[in-house]
Image 1 (cartoon, helix red, strand yellow):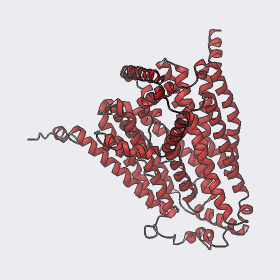
Image 2 (image 1 turned 180 degrees about the horizontal axis):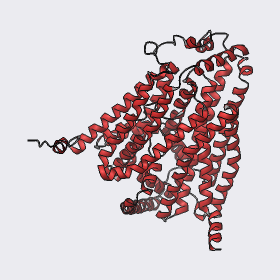
Image 3 (image 1 turned 60 degrees about the vertical axis):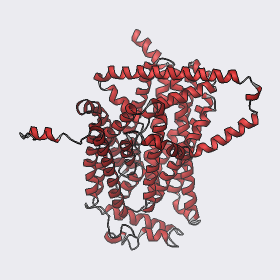
Image 4 (image 1 turned 90 degrees about the vertical axis):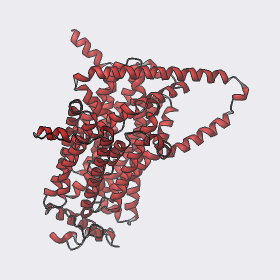
Length: 602
């Protein structure tokens, strides 16, 4: 009976509703992020230009409107902000999935009206995706950055437990959702996959809405109005822990996931972690008291008529402030760079940013390329799941390597392991099945249909006046392309996906190392500014990657993108090696190597 009672209490408790709401939301997000790459390449099967335009638009939207979304959430009541963001996000995904389904099923009829319908469809899909991304950010800020803190109150142990559990849910969905979605698309078709994802979001929004409502009515602290004091205290708290929230775009995940997973699996670090947490608590309490004292002084002075601003002036200033927040990332990079450059972790941060300038990750670009090479949706999903497992294994090994090798040397091993695995990707460029031709990589494809029965290049059909004016031409284009891919070897793309998946192990180790370096060596008062610069650098490099794909969108040019990406990762290794040498005064203990070989240096 006690077991039944405790189980009933857990099933009706706040944590249950929070975890299940997060699981439904994370599962839907993972399915959509995996499926969108497949949808875009099926809509535009001859190049990755649409996929790159999508990624570039998403990066620009976050760069320009990310801070503005946070301001809007702060100014909106908790329940209204969370529920509105939840509903809008799911509705945008459903609408985008419907547009994708209609275009895939009725492609011939739609394109028979003219080429302009194709570009209108592209615009609508990208616009809905951008709106979905921004509303998803709003939901995460409202629930994960605010609600969880209010639910736990001053119980920091409960906060750590809930945060770790949420990250485990993220990692689980990262492994399972792509596999499940890929299998569904493989057996039922991509168009059915769009309907399935749209239906999932339509159904889950009702359940998530109810769970949020239950949590809100269960926790009295959530019903308190957000005032100026609370917002400023939360802002300081976010600055203190903001350095846990950066991660390469290669995974598009939260760094906190890996740190939590690593810490949870290493009992030897519990004492150190508790000491660190206690230190953070004391610092946060001290900072909070200082802010409260400052605000009380401001409120005392506010009684002075000379210090009271008019409502109109405040409104105009608030509007100007919000408009300026659109360029917050650029401002952070410009204003914070002198502080960022003053730390010895500068080169380590640049090394981390270089990891964003690469197509060697399981984002929409790589998923689209794999589909262009004839890989089934199920196999792509399986590869993404295996890659996630390699990344999780890296989080388990990170604390062990840090203890035995030291923090800074762990990073160079992480970068080196990643490069060693990505050599397979470089080799794949010249393997059977690769269409890369260096002499034509910067120009037009010399002949896609050389090994098929097609009589015309799909890209030529697409660019001709008659390409999409008749149903038969559209079908010929798609059939020729698929027939060409089916006759090619899969060795090249298999090596590419294998190298990317295995590289996740070293990637997570390198990323966790750089993250902890910033946590340990940046002053508390400057963490927000330094990590803001790092975030801006990462976003800019990520947008440069998509711009690179826009300029070289065809599959016979992808080998060039692989080589450029590998070069940037090697540049990142060099920057970290420079940091290691400056920090330790040497790169390796060569004299110890000589002693181990029986030779004693003079």
